[in-house]
Image (cartoon, rainbow, N blue to C red):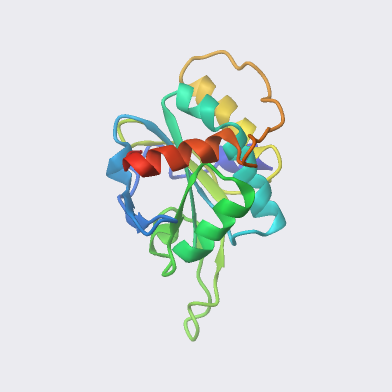
Amino acid sequence: MESAAAERSTLVGRQAPRFTLPDQNDRPVALDDYRGRWLVLYFYPKDDTPDCTCQATEFTDLLFRFRDMNADVVGVSEDSPASHRKFSEKHGLGIYLLSDPDHEVMALYGAWAAGSPADPRQGRTIRSTVMIDPAGTIRRHWPLVAPRGHAERVREKLAQLQGRPSSGAWPVRQKDQRGMSPGYAGMIHRSQGDQR
């Protein structure tokens, strides 16, 4: 399903639409912040639901591998920064989560299905992912996503685009003595230094 839909996407090859949205700490995050690095930008319906939690924890598990490949991972939903913060802390997430309550960025990336003209807010988020290269070009778009295993499939595609060998799946996540995954602990460290 994922692969067939991705092959038909019309977003590939286009410049990624620019955006600035608040993260779980209410700090602005812009596409331009990632210039010079690969960015995996994924859209999901709602914090702390089973499929969305699966995706977020799998991306966190693989975060150090993505960073070794000069890539960052950022999630976007309509949830508030406070909701994102609670979700991150509950599951020890190491990725940034951005808030798009008006669905403007989702619409730019084909991740929002609008409702009727009489009530346009009665739309829905389309679970999808885009991979943006260091020059800001969309190199891959998954317009339909199966949450389980998606993070690893994205990593494999990134390796392919970079001409790297794929080294197989990453082991199951482990947490430190504070109950945090290494990715989340790293996010706290970066937050204290105000760096991404």
